[in-house]
Length: 636
Ligand code: FEO
Ligand code: CA
Ligand code: CA
Ligand code: CA
Picture (cartoon, rainbow, N blue to C red):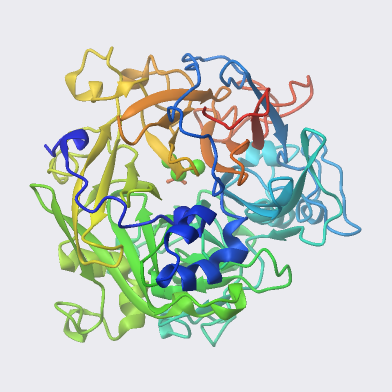
């Protein structure tokens, strides 16, 4: 077992500013005269866009609200004295000029209409401020779809039009939002409004761009992929762009009866395409187009301030079932991107840029994420750890072992990490960096830890049949680009009332299970969002934990306090805020998800009717705006 976090000395406390801290007015003052001047100057234009960067909340305790009780009700609950309002639900028009198709609650909007509307299953999100904390852009992911709710008759029939609508409900939305006299609204039309879908033309950049493994019949250059999908957690860069991650891409592809070793390692199999796109879009039939799956699993950079820009898949950051891309900045101005791969026994990665961040926003840093070193984490027993470079020609990453060049190392990041002996984790989800330079990663759960013929427990993943998950954290030695680190467990999640010792955890405060979303706000509060799966919710170890929730944690004391409980069948995932700390935007994904994962359009409200509660309506993913009734800073 690792040490308790509270007894571990913060040896380099304050030495590693987070992206938020380094961009804040206070930080720029602190750093004045040294590198801070340079960084402060280059980051100044972005400072206003970073969440909670302004001095917010004064000196009171981090957690100043009354805990929200556990609940199984089909409603969203926030603490006493707080207000929650829904905006930007699935199907609402995003505000494209001249295209504002109204949402039809019977699911009868066409594919073309869906291309101008909010997608389904909101996930990672960020608020890019434009006018202080009064207006800005909300950029968010739409992870996947529930075809039972998306189409009027669900899956009773299947057609090219339905596939196109499903593809249009995936991807990313950019919407303009404004505080209109105390109520946040979507601005329509807006010159910034944009939909990026699974059909949007994109580019590859970095070492694998143009690689033979990325070439297809439709794209002989290997540089022009089409679309993004299963966009889960997200991140932002100091130069004002959005990073969206392609997570469980393999389930969109039909595989061969006998997959090769590469395909097997990534889980490709015959009849594995649960979304059935390949039946009407042969790009997703990997039997016909075996390299098409290699064109997914990347981190995609989107410039929301340039609506006509082409999204870029940054191959230098590696290919994985990526969950999030969290950027930290070293004291001398290099960008470091942390990313988890959410699958059982997969890995945690970081990329360190070769070059320093330049002044001038997105255009000046257009290739910053194309050059650098990708590392995978090895957590040793005893609280030490190492970052091992995924560099062709080093160690076992040679042609003799199947890696012809760096491009192949990046396309086959999993296989390279296997060879390097990296630590197989309990499903790494989101990553966040606190003001002391600790980097937190949620390990959501792992029902196969310790099972027959599967990896056993180890120091970083200490519980067999890990139903509750945990949050690990590390501090890189000296600065974010170091190749060694110290780690410990911030918390083993759990339910103190659970009869099973392994499921009790060591929470100090409110019980929770399956941590997933993670964010550090401007005051330093660590926000934790839960994703107990619908099939497991309310049963076994999770029996008494109610609906998925969001908690606030005090990183100094370890206390967790429940702030929000979502409606029935939802996951709470994605949170961001305004610079003044007075508005939070929280995404509610798949309310009413049925245990079968495909809802029945004849009984769309069987599990939830949130947020419209209309007799003929369907449950909808949406963004929730949370404020304090007295206009105060959230959490105080
Ligand atoms: Fe899409 Fe791992 O959550
Ligand atoms: Ca999700
Ligand atoms: Ca997640
Ligand atoms: Ca999850």
